[in-house]
Each structure stands twice: as structure tokens, then as C-alpha cells.
Length: 247
Image (cartoon, rainbow, N blue to C red):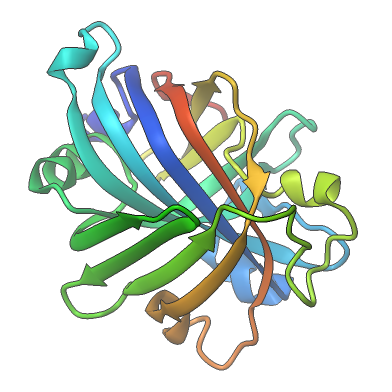
């Protein structure tokens, strides 16, 4: 019954000081093999989407504990935009491929209580008057990332080549979505973890992605990912409910 422990069994609260999400468009045939049974791609105009989320997290703890007992750490996640097969419009969610954090405690706890595939990394965040510079280094350079997000200036346009025609369309694929989906092999079922947030108003930003080695490996090697959007949000309370079996 150990698989029940990995269903995200404890409601979690946190505070996002900064969250930057980069969404890449791919041909559906690139991402479809990465999904388990029960999930389908959430597509738009013939594209499927992979998001890279960078989050400076504060006061993460079980929801029944005060914020002062929480932990502060960096978190990155690589997630596919999906839908529950046969589900309704509300059953949109994210399927996590990999997570990185700079806190060893989070690696242990995250891999014990979720299927989010946590790895230890080194992360630095440099805040400037005009933007944020994030650098992430992983043990074997399998998910190294360097990105600069420009937060000042006028409203940026969507990245060149984006499949989205408007910011409203792009926000639908900016995350987070109502659910994070896990696959539980022991029961061949989908586990859904519902997210709750306050005052979530992501703003489009211009980014310079200087390195992203996750996309240099299979199944992405040899493809031509398109940066479809980039959104930033700051100072947001966030919660995850306990996981539950959806299908």
C-alpha cells in the first residue's frame, strides 16, 4: 500500500515570491508518448505544449501549520499541458516530467509523497531594477537553465513564431491549471491534485533564454521547439489539496 503515500496525501500551503513560466510549442507526436494512459494532450491550433516553471517558494508547509514553520526554496518543473481523457473542459491539468529544487529536504519529501520526480540542483536568482536573472545547474547538466526576464518597459509582444494570436489565448497556456495529474501504476489510475491560488494575474514578459539543456535530450533532441509565451507573477499565496483518484 506504499503507493497511497505518493498520492500527495497532505494539503500544502506556500507563498510564491516569484513565478516565471515559459511555454514551448511542439508537434503533438513529440509529447504524446510521454503521457500515461488516461491523459491526452491539450492542444491549440495543431500544437502541444510543454511549460517550464521557475518558482521562488516561501513558507511551504502542511496547511495546518503556521507559515513560520514552512521552508523556503527554489523549485522548477517541466510539465505537459494535458486533459483527462473523456473529461470535461474543467479537467485540464499538467503532467509533470521532472522537478528540480535546491533543498535536499524537498527532494526527499517530494519523492516520498508525490510522483513529481525531484532532483537536487543549484539555483541563483538575481533581481535587478529591470528584471530577474535565474541560473539553474543540475548534477549532470541534464536540466541546466539560464533565463533573463525583463520586467520593466512597455507590454511586450508575444515571442516571434508563437502560435497564439493574442495574450488572452496565451494565458490559457501560462499555468497553473486546475489540476496536476499523477499516474499510479499500481492501480492504473490517474490521481488529481487540485490547486488553489489567490490574486493570480500573470503578466507577459520578454525573456532571453540563454540555456535550456532539458530540451537537448530525447525526445526533444532534433526538434524545433517554439517559445510560445512567457508570464511572470509575484507575491501569490498558493495551496494544493490532497490528491484523489479521478479515473
